[in-house]
Amino acid sequence: MKMQSFNYIASVAAVSVISLSSSFANAFSDYCDSSSQSSNVEWIESIAINGKEFASGNNDGYIRHPEIVAMLAPGTNEITLTPGFPFNVAFSETWTGWIDLNGDDLFTDYEKIFEFRATTPETVSFEIPEDLDIGLATLRVVMSYDGYNQPCGEYVYGETEDMAVSVDPLLFLD
Ligand SMILES: [Ca+2]
Ligand SMILES: [Ca+2]
Image (tube, rainbow, N blue to C red; front, top):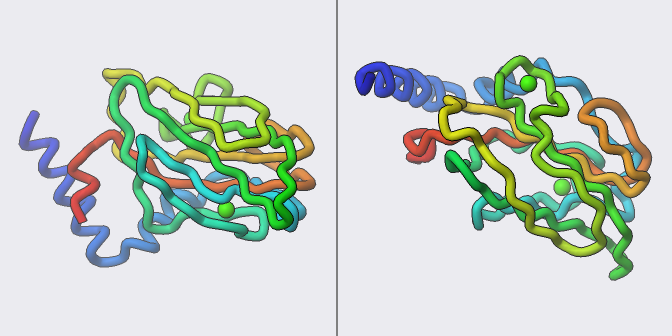
């Protein structure tokens, strides 16, 4: 059991040394497109997972964080979603998040980890099943002014961000 675990980690580390960015690009390549038409007046400013913040600012409607792996814990996790506004005028935004827990490149209702509407930064908790072995998985967050809450497709105002997540602490050794 232990040997299998270390063999797996060793192969991931080898890939990351040789070509980290292309490895992640491949990991994301099969997901459906999601983006806004405009992030001029609201965007995803930052996503913090279990207290570690990943700030991105305005990314023109979509960003895939290329070399970030956010650490999840089996059981309860916290995520803080912070919107960005250019004119000190805050709008109400619909936030929806999914994690592709089963690795089939689809974000299903079963994999939705939050959905809410808010004007200010909000922290919500979600559960990762204790017995689930996810090596690397993808978190998708959609923030939409127009209330769009689907994992795929184009909406008018807001932003989509994709990020690699893992529950395996050995993947976080830099
Ligand atoms: Ca952003
Ligand atoms: Ca899935």
